[in-house]
Amino acid sequence: MKQLLLFVLTWILLLGQAFSEENKLLFVQILFRHGDRAPIDLYPNDPNPPSVWPEGLAALTTLGKKQQYALGNYFRARYDNFTTSSPLEVNVISSQADRCLKSAETNMASFYAPDRKWSFDNNLPWQPIAIHYLPKNQDKYLESDSDCPRAEEEKQKVLNSPEGQKFLKEHEEMFKNLSNLSGYLIANWTKASYFHDVILIEKKYNLTVPTWVEPYWNELTNVSNLSFFWSYNSPLLHRLRAGPLIQRIIQRMNQKINGDIPHLKFQIYSAHDTTIALVLDALNLFNMIAPPYCSALLFELFEMPDGVKTIRMLYQNSSKVEEKIDPPHILILDGCTEFCPLEYFINYTKSLMPEDWNQECQLDKTFVEKIQERKVTIGWFLILIAVIMAVMSVFLLWRMYSRRQDKNKFCHTLPFLSGYSDIEDGK
Image (tube, rainbow, N blue to C red; front, side, top):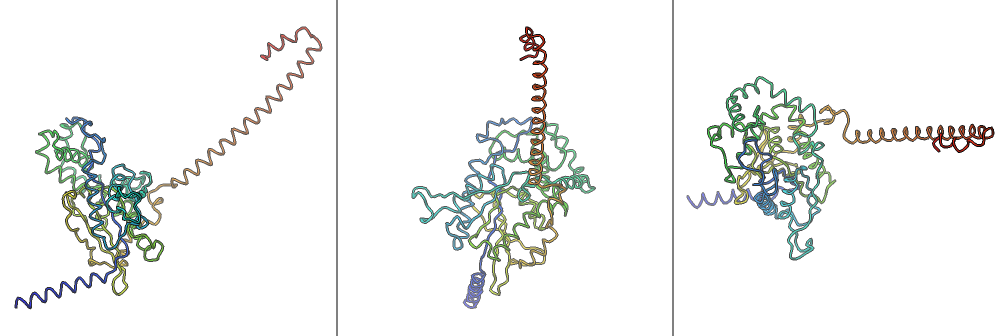
């Protein structure tokens, strides 16, 4: 009986492996959070000076670099049979923040360490990989606070909604007491999250943490986790803040299927915890826990044996990636399966797709249009100045000519006063 059971289990395992091997991996997109960093800022009564952070506030730490290097090694091992060292296979987009740019660089150093073909120095296991980014105020893909007036208005509506006010009321006493003790005004979940971030990092690095924090720590942690939900708790915010990135992810998959990017195998996005939480929340997959450093969302595009294109979503959220990276969690959309048909995914996210993001954000003109308009305005201004100067020059020449004519007439009458006349005229 045991032998029969063992045979059946072995057969099922082999069948599963065979089925898995028939699913052809076509393309991978990875959205990860930067590595460990220093606090964004300190609070007024913070006993720890900024000098304890040698690379500066908000900067990627040495630990953060180790974490990203480990994450890159993890990706290399996971996709070992899919990738080579060719830099043509990977495209990297980052937030403008230095910690994200450096995280991307460090990750690529291990993920795309060169083999002999791509190495330019046998003693240096590294090759340059281009990192692309947009200015923060224009980055609708990776920045949750890029210029979008309508989104900011909607955030205020969520804050002032009955549900939002009820949540704030529940934690009003903590906000008030911590504001008085810290010297930092905590009026909402966003401010609470900022303060929690500072204390969490200082705890991690065994720095001085005031004793008055401890009675509120669990409540503060809970509010901080939920701030990712409350900050964007609106279909409109999902559309304006998560929609552009999801739209790009779909666009990239379609480009791969259509043969527009034949050499590309990986699209990488280096961003923030808010970016990951936004995408998860928009897809109704957020677990109400802040994404840790180096957490990563993986979007794998497959071709099934019957030719159907599917997408598998995975979430890597190990808390200590520098030590161990656990197998990622499989994410399944409502009404779908692990290998979700791409068509289903597109229909599921249709309401998140902005038709004209600039217009929906109530940005009257795009940044480029504003620059072009400004150039035109400056051009017309310079032309106007040139015309005015030309007219003034003609007038001055005419005036000088007229005076000279008058002077000549005067000198014919009183020749001995000619020198005096020149002085009076300022010549």
